[in-house]
Image (spheres, rainbow, N blue to C red):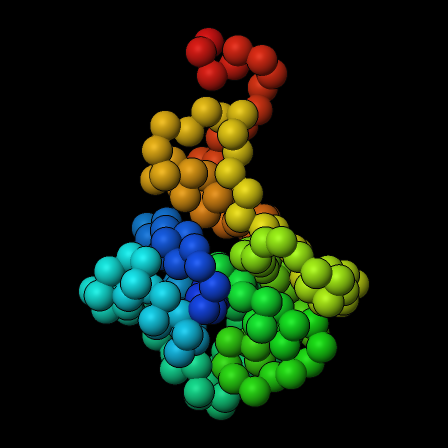
Length: 198
C-alpha cells in the first residue's frame, strides 16, 4: 500500500448511496490512507438508480482496491491485514443485522466483523425509517459488540443550502468518527447561535 494505511468502505443496498460515494471521494484525496472498497450486489443497483449508471465505475477508479463482495478470502477478511477501520455507508438493515448477529456470508459483513474482533472502529450509517423493535435490537447488539451506529442525519443547524451540502456534512462526520490522525474532514462545527454568520 506504499506506506498508506487501509480504510475499508462498504456500500450496502440501502438508499443513500451518494453518501458512500462522497466518503470514497474524500478519502481518495488523502495521501495517508488507501481505500478498500466493497459494494454489495444490492448496492450496485442502488448506485445506478440514485447516483448514475457510471457511479460504480467511478468508485472503482477512485479506490486503491476494489474487492468483490463474494470474495470471502480477500485480504481484508483477515485480522492480520492492517487497516485503520471501516465505514459502511449506507448500511442496510440486512447488513446491520448480519453484522450484529454474526451472519458473515459475504466479504462486507466478514470485514466488518474483523474490525470488531480486532477492536478497530466500525462506523455503520444505518439508513431506515421508521424503525421497529427488531431494528432497534440489532442496533443495540451492534453497539454492545463495538460498532458505532451513526444514522445519516442532516445537521439542519448548519443551514445547508443544497443536498450536496447535506451529503458532504454526513460523509465528513462519518470519516471523523474513525478518529484517525491526519484524517479530519470538514464537517461543520456548531459554535452557538449566529456562528455561521460570524
